[in-house]
Length: 126
Image (cartoon, rainbow, N blue to C red; front, side):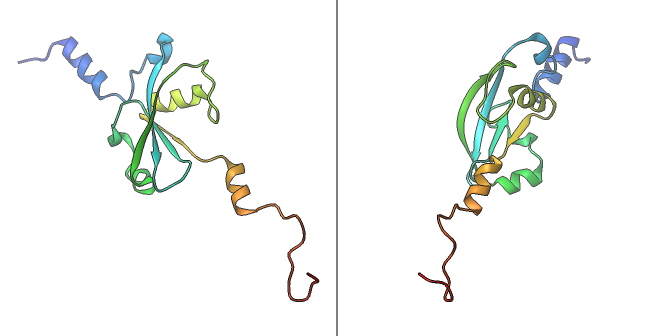
């Protein structure tokens, strides 16, 4: 028995990472954000809640367990603290996910603390 055209369309739409024309329609994109419990300040944005099947296996292994942190409606005009909403939406539309890494300044500050004076050693005055 042949599948009706409408059913084929709905099946294709259900399997897509996010409706392919969502950005063209100018609608908001419903996103779900998860924090990596293994990598601090690392987040994964998904187009579908709890749909981790779209993540590459190597990325899923690197991130480890993920904890749900936020549900948000994105538009191209929305201001995000660290990311460009258009880039996030584009990547979710194409891949089904977006990886948000920690800002570089956080890493550099953690690895190179400011010193108020030169380090003191055995041959220097205290």
